[in-house]
Length: 401
Ligand code: UDP
Image 1 (cartoon, rainbow, N blue to C red):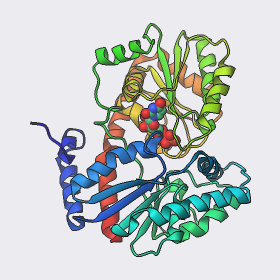
Image 2 (image 1 turned 90 degrees about the vertical axis):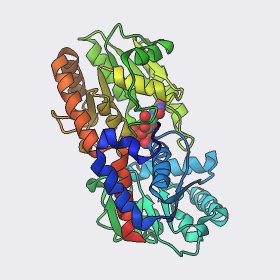
Image 3 (image 1 turned 180 degrees about the horizontal axis):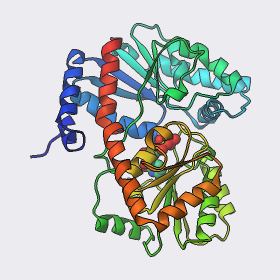
Image 4 (image 1 turned 90 degrees about the horizontal axis):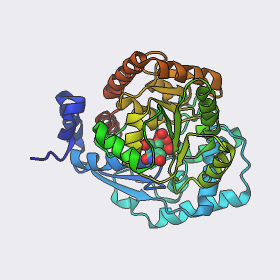
């Protein structure tokens, strides 16, 4: 008999967690909750909602998910906002601001919010829609971005919208804003161990998947799974690979899908393919194939995540869950997942020599790889699996409504 709901996770998180979830959900039965974000596909937020929304429904909440129907022009503006929140100096024209508000106003007028008891708005894209609604229920702003050093003029423009929210939810203590006086909660993201990206694969299945994409394991594999985004430092990845390859014969796969709300992806992809020039043993993959991501994370000797800024970095938890050691940068939510020398290696962003050094060490010490892989897996099991995320949301909703 197939299990269908939260009880499917007993093997990963234990019975007590499932019982806690059922208990936390009881006062919330029938609650009508709406999530709003701007893409069904690509990037960590969409992936998380794909797992969280059905689980909320399974727990007894009426959870809905709506998309802000942006067009490419809007996403040019909202990517600028994203970049500015991560600290880039960005100029927003009057036209940009008007486009942002116009789409939100239009969306706010036709979206079915009045049928819900609580609204959760993800990230800056749909942030101002609240301004165009009569507010009758609690609204929560779930920000997945590192807010610690935003470009001030853009932060000042966005802050009045945020102030209208009843609560904000951030991924890490380090993202808290002292100048944001609304109730702020911390809920780190999580991965779904039963999704196509994370479900257990046999070595044969994983290798067959790699082989069907032209990758074989005749050389140790280094992998970075990331949207093609400058914040993920794809050039840094090439740099580290070159350095490592001087000492160890190995291959690199960089795989990244294109999120519909990230218009910079195709250009950055072109740039790095051009810059990779004649480098041997480098594979670039842009198609979205979750099974392939799974197989790569499982079979990599080392996974890299060299982000210059990061919200949380779900790809780190995904690799650790597969017991693959990770070398990643000390930014955003990554240090929650990687404790240097215990569950992986942390380096400072841009310190390619240190990253190469850790990769070379891992490639030459199988016991170290196994040790870090095992403790990384245990760490993710304890803190970063979907049932914990669901429980955190249920507890927060219990406080809010
Ligand atoms: N991902 C994917 N295919 C790709 C690249 C990424 O399925 O080619 C997934 C990846 O497995 C992870 C998510 O997209 O679940 C990226 O989340 P993360 O938090 O690492 O970064 P974001 O894109 O949200 O900045």
